[in-house]
Length: 278
Image 1 (cartoon, rainbow, N blue to C red):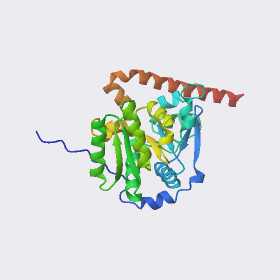
Image 2 (tube, rainbow, N blue to C red):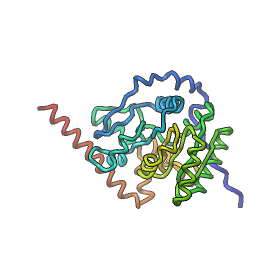
Image 3 (cartoon, one colour):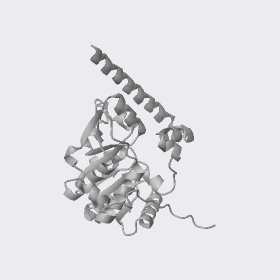
Image 4 (cartoon, one colour):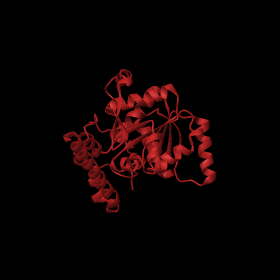
């Protein structure tokens, strides 16, 4: 049987002088919006990459960057046990399509949704051009190896200086910490799933030097080719979550949590209208 060809990825920024565009972004004009009392960065995709470029170049980290969707955001609301994640994160990017709807309902419209895979490809291409170093950490070791080979094929010369699976015992965990401390990567892709990856970041900041740590959830499964992205129609209409639910029935609990998010937004909207009318 013929060997399966590795997945290849590219960036929509390939034919543009995107470095100049990122440098021209006025970072002081960027702002955050509050969605159900959780701050979310109101940025375009280009502006989000510009923020990462600035954080890496200033070397004042470590910084945590995470993607918010309705389920995560609901878990990070004030008063809940995971609210510390919202306070910990340096950047919170809107990934789930439901956040755009919620922001409009709450009269705090976001510029756009930042699709995680496309954004990560922009970061890899940026790292290639700027010679930033990347460390891959998370998922299964064989999955990370596939990601490593796929990225090297798509972006020859990219400096991925370390890679390790996210399942390890106490002894292996210490080896990973020391590898990170010694290599001092500019960017870490951390894929342990929410909220495990955020807890790992909080508990290991002393080993992360000045890295920008991007929490990528299950993106390694997609980048490795083990899991396919939602079809185009689902992504275009913001229904990737629905496609995942019907193809993986075990995600029904997540679906119910999303319903709770939508109801919370509707209730907040009605409350705002009531206050306005009085």
